[in-house]
Image (tube, rainbow, N blue to C red; front, top):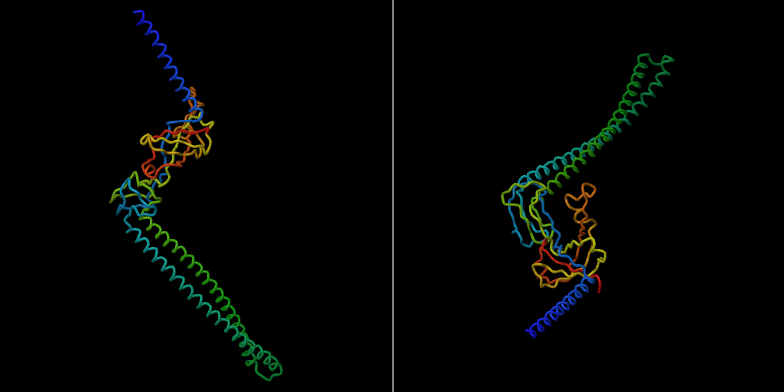
Length: 347
């Protein structure tokens, strides 16, 4: 009995010693690790997601994609019924033709007004010649009537002819001025007609643009998600139809505690462990920091100035760019996946 008790008394210290050694080794490893690394499991895969909305309203005529499939930038994914927009384009084209015809009429009026101006100018010259002749006859008859060489009646006729020539000359001048003004008026009308043509051309361009919007294209290459449209559905302008997760836009958003970011700087190496694929070797680097904490950027940010205050450690989103991963792995990553990241703060 005494021997067995002595053996048991020896075993207990040995076990305790082994446990202490193991604990010391584990603690040392942990200390060495965390002195060189900053970890967090509050992280997820993110990516650029492009929402696709209808820019015009109409009935869905054709859907040319399947949800969760890859599409290329510029591919036509949805076609709306374009009948109404074709009619509007025809109306705009007809309006433009009418405006162009108005320009032709104005140009013809300018040509006619210019011809009238030339005629009026020629009439002035003819009236001037008649006036000079009448003035000479009047002066001659005025001398002759004094010595009785002609009768008073002849003198009165010469005077009347002079006055008539003077009136004709004045009228010719007035007609010329009016003709010149008419040219200016028709030129103004032409400018208005040209403005009308420009406005009608804008309407045509707008109608073409609206017609082009009936073909909804992929804004970027990537995988289509969140499909919210069916054939025959009436969609409105601004309605969200689906979203595209952009190709090659995958990155990691890690929410580090504010007490952890002291030693984290841009460019540090990061090991990324995806929960769904823990054995994959994925490397990255710190790209940038969010300008506000996650709580401050929420829909209802906390207001510490009201009520009782309880200090809570805030988290700051840090963007991590993936620098090393296989193509197969990148194709498997999806925004929202949970990951664990470890930042190497010391070499």
